[in-house]
Length: 271
Ligand code: SF4
Image (tube, rainbow, N blue to C red; front, side):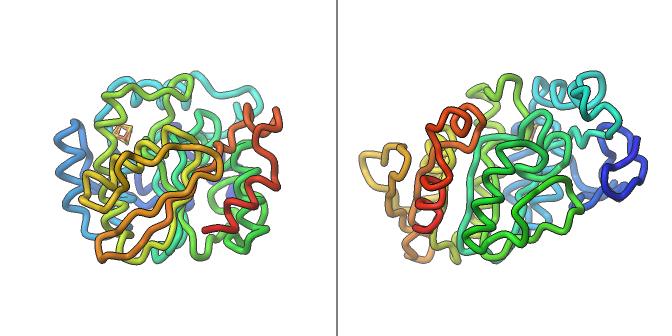
């Protein structure tokens, strides 16, 4: 089956280093098979590009590996049945020098799990990238597929869980297994960070816990999530990082009006 933009044929899941647009891995990228492997490979990643590559070949959570690959092979949505599915963990996306991070929850089965790029190819992404474009962070308002030319400036998007989970619900064990990838991401980007926009309460709690693990200054008691919530965190160089909460850009929030464009624009303006 052919990539929807380039027309190049790929199997599903997409093999590392086979030419998928934006694939950071190669056939030689080391693969984490266990939670201990994640800790070792995340902790030793020398930079964000190595970290991204290692993330995208991880196989440490048996249930999530099985699910993401099942969706990518026999579970493709009818409207995408003629496309290859990425079917692998999803790397962070955006400016590696960004002073602002966006932290979501996990890839969507037919969004990032299909396209291989954060928030790409579904309604949640349409909302997020349109808002980032209005704020000047994104080069275009839409995010259809990896290779569509989208560039982010001054912002990078990541997540506490990198594989699509059934029903969007990772288990406690899966969240713990994946946490070292986020910890390393924060460690590598922390000194230059100004603010973090967290989409939803699961991402908020994961970010607070990660900051605590890294020894960053987190208020006590732990700041509580809410749309528009804000908390100061002291980063690794004594730099203050503003944690800003937003309702997630999921369809159940945007379709119901729980999250409006104006509400999202207002929190992004505070980053
Ligand atoms: S959820 Fe995280 S730790 Fe688990 S397999 Fe995916 S990338 Fe690896």
